[in-house]
Length: 456
Ligand code: SF4
Image (cartoon, rainbow, N blue to C red):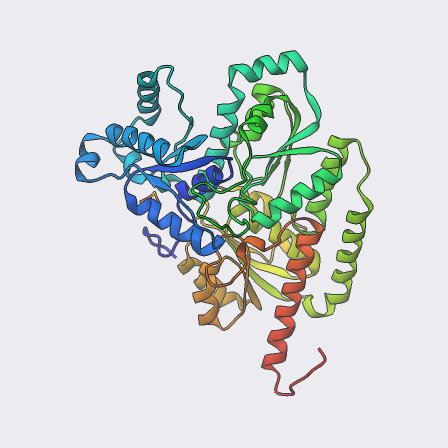
């Protein structure tokens, strides 16, 4: 739609992505430098999606802070957090307000730590995340890079590196904004190759944990400081998602500054992209693909054949995070479904570039929308008459209005249970997603038919 305003954007707020990263570091607590509302909104989104208690602190801007700056508030927040949570790490992310008034947070943190002198204090990691110039995915990548840079620059790590050399059997994994279940599955695969993964971040336990007998202020789990310090020693890094530019990529930072071999891969959804992921692991580990994954691949190919009669020529609208949209679109094309509209609120041109790689058969049938909001998506979708929508739960209003089903993937999923355990990745995750898609198509046909078929 040709307007200057965004209505119901197809993206979320940048410090939300940064907060998720900090939730995946052991003993860490995120603090947002800005007003309380930002932290409350992000907590609300996390709690509703992950169904776990989530603490996010705030430097609590009021009118005077907005005029005179937030240094004093930030210092007080750091002291309070340290006293109340006793964290190992404090992750500071900025918000629209503190960025707009030009608060120099690195300088504030420097002043704060100078005043502390030799007094022990948690590690403070800072990510600049103005939401008006990026999405939750930009905030996520900014925080991953901040964590990687922070621990790569530790003096003791450099000494360790020169003393012991590189560790061939460890790999850094930058998994992108995926579900806790996806992180667990990636970990299982990499360990099956005999390689030890260091995830940045790993919220597979902190945001999908076991029940507690008493409230834990900071949940168990996350990547430990020792693991983060080992990042300089690993010989390879797997960075998932191709939408990252040079400047924002932690993997490229490790490659250029530390000499780590980078494997930049698309999110492994569908057979082609998962094959790329497994081939990289073969190179990194020097081992064959374990039989269990060859069997998973075989079952997925068989399922593609069995379900072809239900799916061929069906049309889908795909929306959400850029990397997720690209990988899902490529996967749908493998199955005979045409992703007639691929839309993301992201600003980048990567979506167009990545989808240009599809075969001519599909390329000319796909409408691509970047910087999209749900008004744009609705306008296009109504004209394209899709059989289903696939994306996060923000698409429910459109799905209801159009009377077409929504297959929920990614983040956020606020209107279904078990979002933490949605599988998207590799042969197994693709299989689960594929079965959901096929059953959605069958269920729609069944409910629309007057005959009341019981065999479909
Ligand atoms: S004001 Fe900016 S940082 Fe705060 S919640 Fe809104 S978009 Fe996010």
